[in-house]
Every structure is written in C-alpha cells, then in structure tokens.
Image: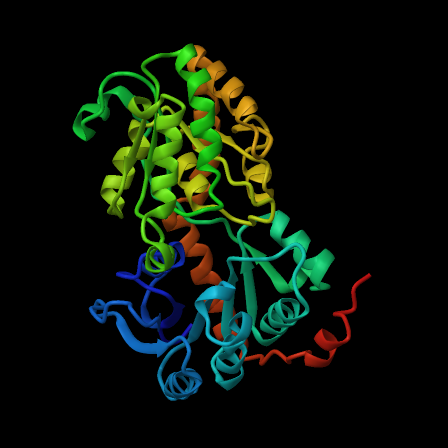
Length: 392
C-alpha cells in the first residue's frame, strides 16, 4: 500500500477505551497519522501524530478533514465506529465523513446492537457498504451483523481485540510493589460507571470472605469523564456505601485514577481472579476481558456474547448476570482451588497469544494494504437500509 494510514477516532489524552485502542493499533500497524474526534471539554494537548482535529458536533469539520485527506498521500483511512463518539443523531455524521472521502475506508465496528433502532441499523449498514473493508472483533459480532443487519459475511474481517504482551508471573511477587498485603486479589478495571455490575461482586464479598478472610476486591479506574461531568462521584459513592452497609469496606478497595499502560500491567499481574460482571447482554467486545486473558488470569464473567466466545473451552467461568449468589459460589470455589484457578489462567493466556498487538497490527496492516491495492470504490445501499436491509 502506498502512503500512510489515517486513523479517525477519539485519541489520548482523551480517556476512553476507543482512544486507547486507536493508539495501540496505530502504534502496531505501521506508518500513520491521527484525525482526532474532539469533544468540548477535551484537552487541546494532543501528541504530534494528531494532524487533524474534528469537533464532534461540527459537520463542516468532517467535510474539511475528508477533503484534506483526499488531497494527501494517505493510502487508507481507518474509521473507529461507536455511535457515541461521532456527531449527529446516533453518530450519523460518520456517514457524511465517509461519503466525502475518495480514499479507501476500513471501518472497525466496536458496537453492534442486537436490537438496533431503525436509525442505528441504517447507519451501520450504510457504513459497511461505504467501506472497502469492515472489521469486527469476534465471530459472534460477525454472525449478528449477518443475521440482524443482512450483511454478507464476505464483507467482514474478524480480527481480535489487541492486547499487551504480558509475562506469566506469580501474583504474590507483584503485590508488594502495589502496596497490597498478602492474600488473593479479585480485580475489575475500566472507567467507572453504572452498567458495569460492580454492585453484584460487592454483594458477593461477605460470602467470599468466609471462604478466604484475606481476599479483597479491587476496582481500578477513574469515573467515566461524561459521568463525572453530569453527576460527579455519586456512583462511586453508592458503591462505597454499599460496601460499608455489608460490612466489607476493609475488603473492597477503590483505586480512583486513570492508570498508565505500565501500571495497568502491574495490577493485572498482581490479580488472582479477574471479573467482568457486566449486566449488558449486548456487549459485543470487552477490552478489559481481553487484557485479563493476556495476563493469564482466571476470568469470571457474566455471559455477554464476547465473554461466551472468549471463555469457551475451559478458558474461564460464566455466571448469571446480577446474581451475587452465583458470583460468591464461583469466586469461593476458585479461591479454595489454586490449581483450578491457574489452569483457567494458563488456557486463557495460551489463547491470547494470537491477540497480542504485534499480531493484530500485522493483520490490520494486511487489510490496509489489500484495500489500498484494489482501488475499488464501495457503493452505498441507502435504499436497502430504508426498506429493511433485506433481512431473511
């Protein structure tokens, strides 16, 4: 492929999962520059690779940047899609942007609703049709796009969520450096906000402590910036009060900060069990779960589609969403059985070797090269979207 790849997405120092994903993908896939989707309140202090900035709610910015990219030496444009990061109703400005491009587009689909609104469905169908290639991060996402959105499987590339290459280490050797006392650590991390299901694990902790009085649950991460702007730390406060009411405050620790990649790696290495208690059954990808697998952790999760696919074949344990009783039983079982815990972690670690960033970046680089070489322009099927997308 001639020319560099331009990644269009949120970008650090913006604190969100897609920003982090974009940085890691760009770093691992070759020559690149960034067009940052910028929201009011974001810092202006972007790194040097950010050559363009698009104000999320200003349509003219999308068209201007598209025009500039058309005249540039870019070989392909990588669009990271999640409805909330793009301007317009349900992020519809993404279509205005892609329509204005003459460069081949590779769209990575981070969100695929199982029961989309008509507008959401139309946006996603048209984005795929406008793109030279579209990437999803799991087979379950590909099947959903075919079944619900009527998208042909040959329009989709399945590339896993990238993860850091972490060594398998004994957790107890890492804990002192983080100020952790001896004893098993159950970890969750990510931007804090309702919908993560952390309440369920806190409610399980009285029973977990009966199984091992030295166990503690660590919730790592700052409050989501949008939630922080709306209501401050009210949600974190509710979790703290819940722990106090259950008498487990000494066994639940909140680490209220946005951690660096290095520090996150240390926390993952120090954990004995990782939990994603998400109640949202539509969650089509989870970077946190993928990261935990890369560290060789025993993962306990609710059965959202990504977790079901990633943890099959004995790579983790699934429990019912919202069931503190089920979490208590499985966590207590794994705390009592270190060999079982280690077996789950080893299987997860081995599976994750195909997900490390150098491997994922190389796969994306091949896609960028492929679309840059074809010169084929995809055709938008707007009429198809309006009449129901040809669903069977």
